[in-house]
Image 1 (cartoon, rainbow, N blue to C red):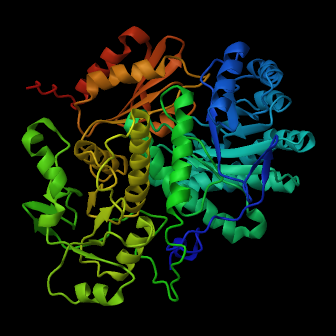
Image 2 (cartoon, rainbow, N blue to C red; image 1 turned 90 degrees about the vertical axis):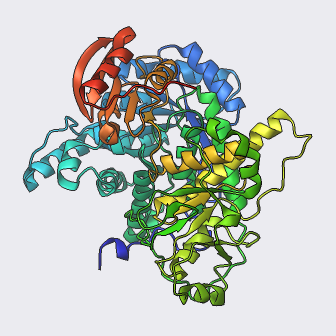
Image 3 (cartoon, rainbow, N blue to C red; image 1 turned 60 degrees about the vertical axis):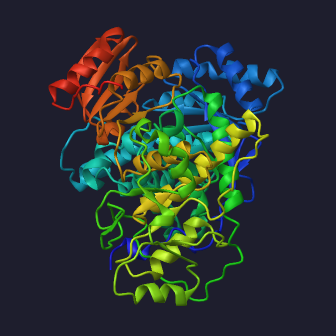
Length: 605
C-alpha cells in the first residue's frame, strides 16, 4: 500500500465538512475556528512611499479586504512600515498589516515591530536557492537545518513576545536547494519545507501561525494543500493550524479568475481554507470582489447536499494526492472522440447551438462540438444504485452524466458517480444541475456582471476540481445563459486545468512593491505579440522571488532583474541578461524564434 493511501485530508469526500482548526489572531481579526473565511490582498505600491501605501490600504479595506499585506524587501524598507501603520490607524482604520518577507531575516526582525503578522517563505528565508544540484550527506543537511534554525528562532521569539501572527508560506517556485535535492520539486518537498519551520515554532511554544502551499499550477497547488492537511492530521489533533489559500501568479482577466477558482474553490468545497487571497495581475482592488464572490459561491453551493448520508460510502475512484486521468473506453459521438485519452470535448445545448449556428465561423477556437440532446447520453442520479447498475451491465460503453434536478453538489455527485460507475464509461461533467431558463430582460449591467462572475467561478470550481482529479471526459457549462460566453468558459477551464491546451498559456504574478516594471502593461504587450502561439507557456515575473522556480513548467520567462532591466529565461535558466525594458518584448519574440516555437499569427478574415 502506498504512503498516500494511508493519508486523509478530508473526513468525507462526498459530504461538506469544514476543517476544524485553532484560531490564529492577526491583530483583532481571527482566522480559523468559527470565524468566517477571511479575504485579504497585497499592496502594489512601493513600501517606501508611505502615503501611497496608506491610500491603497484604506481603499482595499473599504472594498472588504480584511487583512492587507505589504512587501518588506530590506531592513531599511521595513522601517517604513511604522509610518504606513501609523497613517492607516490615524485614518480610523484597524485593518491588520502583514509584512511579506523574502531572503532577509533582518527585514523580518524590523517588520515584526510594526505589523500584526509576518509572512515568511521557508524556501528563501535562510536557506540557499541557487538551483545547485548536489548530494547532501546527512551531516551537511543537518548543518544547513541548524543554520536555518538559528536565523528563524529570533523571529519566532519576537512574534511570541509581541503577540504577532505568522504565515509559514511555502511557494512551489522557491523551494531551497536543500529541500529540492532531498525531496524534489514536489508537493511533498513543499510540505516538508513548511513543517520544518512549524516544528521550530512549536519547540518554542509558539502557535499563533498558519500555513500556505502556493503554486501557479492548480494541480500542484491542490495536491500540496491536501498533502499538508493530511500530514497535519497524522501528526495529531494539536496540529490543527489554519490554512491560507492562494494560487500564485494566476494572471489576469478570466484566465486569472478561473485558475484561482479551480485551486481555491476546490479546496474550499472540501472544507479546507480559512483565509484566501486571489492573486491577479491587476490593481489589487479588483481582487477583493473576486475573492468575496468565490467564498460566497462555495459556501452557498456546498450546503445543497447536507441531507445526503451514505451509510457505506464507496472508496473514491482516484488518488487525491497524485493526478491520473480516469481510464475509459473511447466513444465517437457525432464525429468527436470522447474518453480514453481523447481531448476533453465541449458540449452545449440545442438551444445554444441554434443561437450560434449563423456565426460558428466567427467563434474561432471556442467551437461547440457536441449537442447534448443529440449525444445519446444517459443521465442519472448517482444515489440510484439500480440506474448505475443498469449502465454497468450494458454490453457497450456509454457516455454518462448526472441528471438535472439532482439535489447534490456537482463535485460530490460526480465523485460518487465515478466511484460507482464502471471505469469503461466516459463521464460528461456539468457545472450545475439547475440551469437557468434565461436571463431576466430587465437585468442591469451590474447585476449581469455579478451574475457572470458568479457563473464563471462556480463553473471553474466544480468542473476544474473534478478535472484536476482525473474525472471527466467532456464538459458542459449550463449556468451561463449567454451561448458564446458559456463556450469560452468551458474552453478556458479546460486550459487552466491543464487537460486541453488550445491557446498560449501565461503565468503572470500580481504586482507588489518588489515589482521592477509595470506588470499589467507588460503582460498585455506580451499577450499582443505572442497570443497566437498555441501550446507555448510564457511566464511574466516582476522580480526573482518566485520567478525561476515558478517558471519550471513554462517554456519561456520574462523576469525583472533590475529597475528598467529584464532577464529572459528558457525554462528556469536565464539566457539573456539586463535587456533594456523597451527592447525586452521584441527580444523575447526573438528567443522564441531561436528555439523553433514561433509561427506567424494567422491573418484575420
